[in-house]
Length: 367
Image 1 (cartoon, one colour):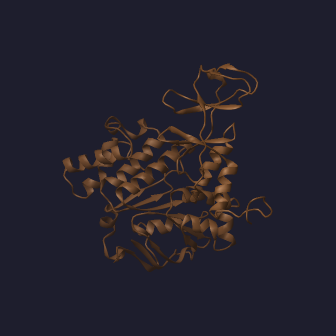
Image 2: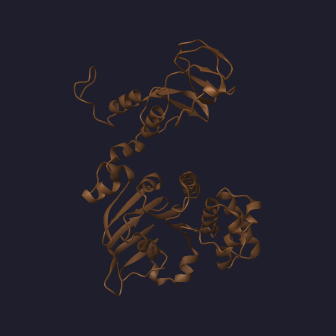
Image 3: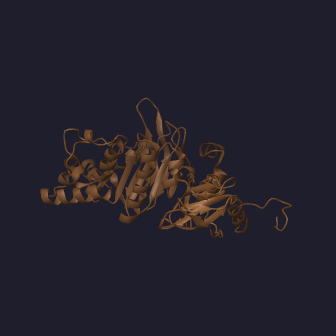
């Protein structure tokens, strides 16, 4: 657990980067510091490992004032991931990841074993461990940065804009990887981002920092979306926060059974949209047979957009329905078809469970 107690950072020219910050970071979760440029989020992060020293106040790590520990010793026990990975270009991936264990005084064999384990945890191979950073993609380099942060077996990992330099697809994969690692290892992660969507996706708790280094609000993602503390927070979270809040509701939506066909199988004309699946029952796409009949050709199969896992959030279910050419969202479990849902069915379930208000005057529904 990390606790900020009345922490202020004021520079020699009078600039206040962080102003009287009091905040308790829960143990064993992901806390995200988010806010506009110049709001003090990175300064706050760097004060945890004493890369920046506070002007006043104190920071406690597991009840101990971090100012009482030598800064270099403190940093070796706190993982740190930065935007462009910060790898040593003249060292192999393995040597990069071994850096912290060696600084901790581990012998070469133990350090090597820990590094290989960390490399495999982030989804890289031992073959890639022999390469140099320049021989890897940007996403792979960032995975090496995460592996290096984990190799010393820290209980706390700090991440400063770790995924902002990679493309959206890689970014999503890395976010999922970090969430998985946090849950598997039980570590405490403190992350800085300027991206509110990333904060809402990853954060168990979110600290919204305002201009002048003030803490505007500290809350769970659901609380932040439902009850922003003021106009600044509401504007920063965005005008579509009602839609984003659907990510935190998982309504019990009845799933309808869906007839499927295979490519090459004959269908009757006028059947409308029919779901195409492979021999193992895994959905492949939709085909519209409104004006023709006969064997289904592969070139007529249209992708179905988002696919929702069973038990998915309302936002995912709605997106599956709205992105489907048929208007029916595909629901799967372990890749196999469970059935389909429509947007109206998702919204009806949300109303039944009180997640959204029922429009007045709807037949058969209670306002």
